[in-house]
Image 1: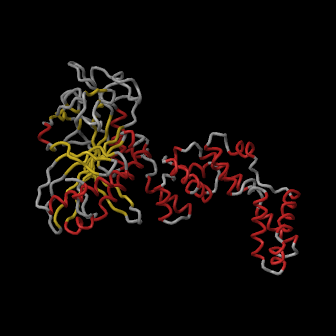
Image 2 (image 1 turned 90 degrees about the vertical axis):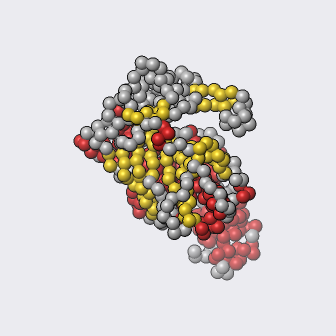
Image 3 (image 1 turned 90 degrees about the horizontal axis):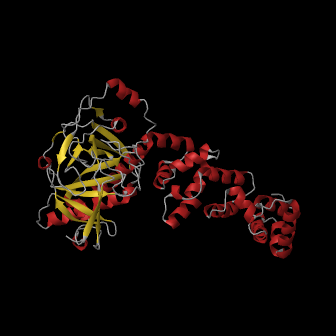
Length: 502
């Protein structure tokens, strides 16, 4: 099935209801791996952070990472899950070259957290509840690099390189219950859920959850059923989708693809699929196994995990203010609408604005600069807002310079340009570039006199009572001073010299 053979999205939704299941893998930010003492630091030389345990060598025995268990419990609590009194690890048996033990230590029918939910807010303010089936502990695989092919995949490659540094890094897999009733908004719900989950994980401090680095990745399971039917259709699983936009695009594409296959009398194959960023399409990977194909059985080398109730409640007390609650509080404090708050969230500006306010700036001014000039610069560079080389403290200082009259908006934008170019902080840039507002009465008075003398017709209109015409004279003053005049004071002086009350 190619992109050109898809049915339209509206046509797909007219005949079928989508059902989704989202599986999100979160790489924990622990110092050591889940079952051994090897470092998890990124960027190390290939196969330099391995040991007999994570390589699965004979006689090596695993030991559970306590911080990994603690992180799993905190994630479960934040997702409103029940925490198991007793759970255990299992061996999930399958062979891949990047799986050195030939099995993955995971959890099967006894996860550490289960039966929860996460409320997510869509762009129009509607809140949709996504129910959580389970959150369980497991370990990551190694990394395969396929060399010699055109696509970077194994097909067509001449050889593959294996790096086991990642093998054994702690993962939490968070699995939703079937997401029903979203209708045409299913792709939006998928994106909003992963976005909210990412914010929650970051707030907990258990992972940086950087999707572009593989620290958080989503498998999008999707099926369609005819309108009015109760039985779920056959699902496909689009693996390892690594951006919010891609989660939405993958769900939308699969809805259209499934509908095209079913409408033409075809059959959906239960399989894994690869997502392609360049055009938003998916292609077939492999036939999807069922649970029994993995031959799960209890891990004989690890004792069960039995979190004490007192410890669980102690961890509950360490939970931070959760992202949605925090956003509601900030929206009220800032006095902005749901739509405005959603724009701030979409821009990734919540944390920079909060930090700028904490550094002393008024909230409206902090929002103005992060959502205005700085967001524009980030868009031009194709970068995240927080990746810009300017700190919240520097933005707060910029706000202070504007408030005290040392800078106007035009000069402030030039100051930002200098800071982003690495010329120093706001004060240094203002000094080096000579950007301070001209408020000296002598210099400003000269510019005002020249503006009046150079525009006698306009000056006469102002004398005749057309005060709004003074704007043209202010513009002449601003031009003469290269935008550095205090516009308010210039207007006052123009009216004074023309004998008109403002």
